[in-house]
Length: 79
Image (cartoon, rainbow, N blue to C red):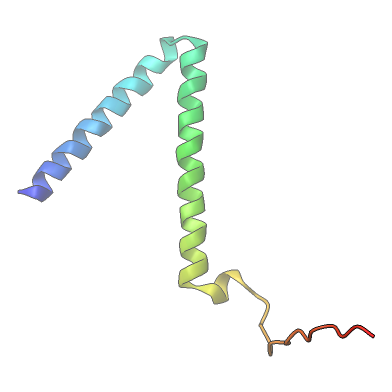
């Protein structure tokens, strides 16, 4: 039951988005800019999420440098 209601909800959201995109051609410039800013924000968040997932799941793909031995920092002695 939950899967079908989720599919119906996503379908209704998709229909609303399509209707908004169709009406966007006749919209005010302020509405067009606001909608563009919202889409840009969503795309930025998704891109950042993808980069984080890539860095955590496959570090050998994202980080080409090999980390060698760790160098310990010695405290500085004052004379």
